[in-house]
Amino acid sequence: ERARLAGAPAAGIVLLADPTKFCSRNPFARPLKGLERFGLDGPILMGEVPPDLVAQMLPVVLVLEYGDEGSFGVLLERRTGALMGDIDIETYGCVAIAPLWLGGLARRNTLSVLHSCEGIKGAKKIREGIFSGGWDAARRKVADSSLAATRFKFYLGGITWSPGQLEEEMKSGAWIPIDASPEALLKERIDGSGSRRAKPVWTEMLQTLGEPGVAAYKIVYGD
Image 1 (tube, helix red, strand yellow):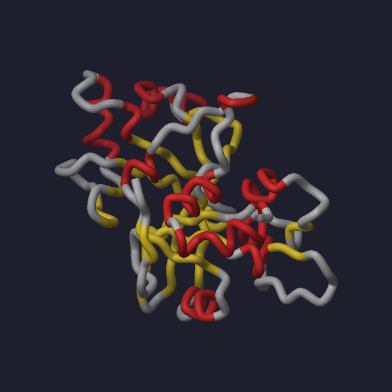
Image 2: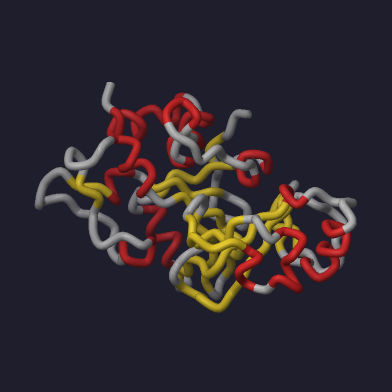
């Protein structure tokens, strides 16, 4: 399903890292400040690692909160290595084998649940087709199979921006903001090898953008 460029920053948009601000080929590059917020030790050294690994390291962030007091989002497709059953089997037993994703290094005690289920008590609408929270009400329906467990994803921590910080990053060209489909945000990606290996989520979403994503794609993958 095709994505499209988003306008102003808002809850529900996806931010794709622009490689010119997160990668470096020379010491004179001017990368985004504070890359450690995204789990990076510094600029990604292009040419030293394969293109798919570069793309895998480039942050993709779903914005969950946006306002005058700052913004908050979660990184997509970053594994912690833990499963939900490792967290609390009583609360998350019905999704025990679901991965616990790393949302980011800020708010480390915050567990966000994202899903596509409208009408769940306590859930907040992030955008059309994407909701956050309401697990206490939802888990009973997952346990009795009224709702599919695959409609839920769980994230530990997140990425925070102080007031005005996200706007400044976007003005600097650090992010490619897109409107992605709920299916693209919540889909299960195959973690296999060879032809079964899923594309990096950065690559996948950039390709669904079509022509507006070509320049960034070529920076990482070449012509």
